[in-house]
Amino acid sequence: PLAALLAGLALFPTSPGAAEFSLVSYNTHGLHRWISRDDPEARFPVIGERVRAGYDVVLLQEVFIADYGRRLGFGAGEW
Image (spheres, rainbow, N blue to C red):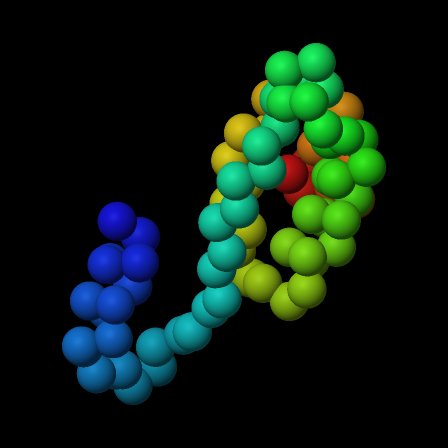
């Protein structure tokens, strides 16, 4: 759905004074270790590095545990 929306926006010309921004939506798969059977504590800092790589807007999905959000490396109030 998001890809279709963004593709549709490309059909419209940019109007004078319009601003551009970059956006990423990332499904973090933030379930507890015993459910996900992997290592989210190690994975979240890597995700944080990727999403801080110059995006203006970052949408994070499935950050169920507050500590995982802190492991993304954002400051207080940023996530």
